[in-house]
Image (cartoon, rainbow, N blue to C red; front, side, top):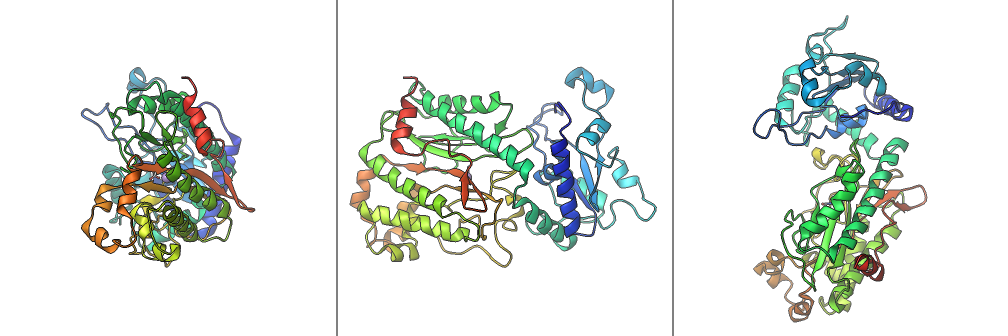
Length: 469
Ligand code: GLY
Ligand code: MN
């Protein structure tokens, strides 16, 4: 970790976040950052990513650290690197320097978290936490707190109270997080432009991926999730990059940057490898774009996110009826989830310190209290079911996919026999998957597209692909 300069605005924001937490709960909190996992020998590790809850209150990706929050005060627990590590890692910032940077009220070696007693009780008594992802740290959390820990998706007691308090804070972004999110969005826009411009000279998907991630890495950022750069857009989270790029293919790129303190962007564009959409590709693209644009226009405080999903479903169904792929009344088609044969996922999710923000908590963040996932095929994949509030950042990402496992499923074939014109669908065989995704900040007035500098209209996309050729 490199620390460059003290940032007063960061320390102020962290202070405010702690004060807000203190106004919501009246017991101490201990949050662990986690640690990296070795690949084969201890010094060769998988990349470290600090727990997002820890990052939210500490601001820095410290490894193997903990913070204790009580009444708005922060104590940092972190071991200074041993002198012998200088040979391999250089001079590391000392605990005291880091404590100052994040505005900690005190700082101690890690062992003191367990052993140090205040005048009243040990520091760990009645302290709430959220279980981190790595098993080693989870065990440490449980040992230090001297109690079993429930998974973060189903906390109980004070851990549940803490989780709800943190969710209420992290749902709406403050000025410091927005500054980071805007940077992640801006770099992501450039990465997509670079990917489009690199396509005509690339032989395989990996060439485009390299061009996109190169922009992100050059800004000292990383990717917020494994990049999806594929001519098989129907494979929703494809992590293969070996396929050759053929004239006539559509390339779907879902790539987002993450800043060095963990804030994410999440953008998808789909473009023709040749630089020109075929008529069938263009027809479906424009239906997906119509859904994308209408959903973004509809974003406003007080709007139910599920209604935005249903709006996308209606526009997709209407467009597919107009193209002769679906048959029937649009409302009825949506009611029976016929749109979901092609628009197979939810319209989007929260974005913040994680690309699917706070989904380590299951649906505790994404779903308003008292709401649960629908069992409906066309609603069950919705990751966010809340009333929109100013400061929330959400993705809008309608898509059209021809997933063989869904379209060839005998039950679906029977259920939708009268509503899908299968012979018409065959004419669209060159459209395997299209998704268009942007990141929208809910503002007092409506929605602000943080990634709006990246074009979405087909002719502009074609122009960007034609650059450099
Ligand atoms: N960017 C991947 C997803 O939203 O699932
Ligand atoms: Mn997304």
